[in-house]
Length: 499
Image (cartoon, rainbow, N blue to C red; front, side, top):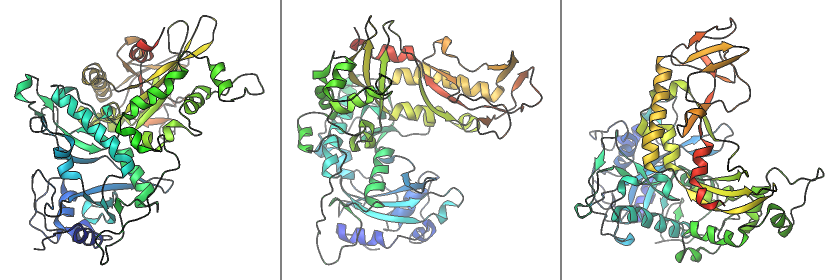
């Protein structure tokens, strides 16, 4: 068996796998047994002669390189996207308790990674999936300070006995994702803390972060000296031209050595607090339209200008990689938010097949950090900027009221949703806004359809229980639905910024 002593040897070996299938990679170690979820990763390790292990350091410890295979999907428009987050090592809350970043299991194991990018094609058996690219990966300099801050935030929760409150959305690039078959996959916290067991989690790089790496560097042709694609040829470490993005929020990354990204943004916005929309528009030379009003996107435009951006904040490199969703919120003089917050439509059949711990809805709230920019109306109808905040849903809410509402939705669909046709409209027994359940369900689109195979409808897992069904309507199709976060719940999360 070949022993890999250097990073150069490992990377050159990885490049030999490009174009090969998983079956070909496994030929090295046909006796290696894999679970369904780890089979591709095991095939990638097999190419290097690595057997299953759970060592604290990197897989190829002599060279200090961790091996990771990560799936790629191709969107309908032909662009590459990461299929999922890159899951790294499991977090041992007890062992990580007294670590610093440089001695952490995350850094010892993942400082250098040989990444194998493979095309996930659901039409083919997994043994026919091919390696598309291989890269020797270190964290780019622009990302490393944020990665360190993310680790510190996770570690703060571990150190203070709050590991059971961790969520992926708390951090920016480096997450703490759930890792286990179900809610029974838990781990002890440090015995000194007298804290409850916490859900098992692993360090992970968020899917948006991986998509950015894919599009910019792996397939996009941009270069960074920490992401090596080409082979080594008789040199120890050839330096490449450093890449600087044209759309970064912070160009001088050294700023982040003394302040967290979130704190920097809030600090930059502070001087504009309590200024009216018109004052801000005049300050940044944003004119009114011919009809005498500002553009519908005026609040978002103002946030961009306050932060010195000529493009959208949610399109900056930092926000994209951190999976931060930007929401400008208008609070009326009656202390209300007009609209609830919508999320993508779900497929009925897919929803009922999910388990809560791996569900799409839980993943959205666990992995997403929200940036709320608030504008409040006074009694004269004038809106003022009241500040901004970063928010993630508390785990107690997510695994409490939201889980209960999700489970009720699944049960309703499994037993047959009740549909009643009356006075030209259809009502159902899915969770409504008036129930005050934190989330509710209703269509996102304006057009309703109960006709089979209509673009605005989706097939139910079991036929609906109809009352007064029109003849043209299907028994097992109904208008596409999505989850909404209640506006009064959102209002409660930002109440400390309001007058």
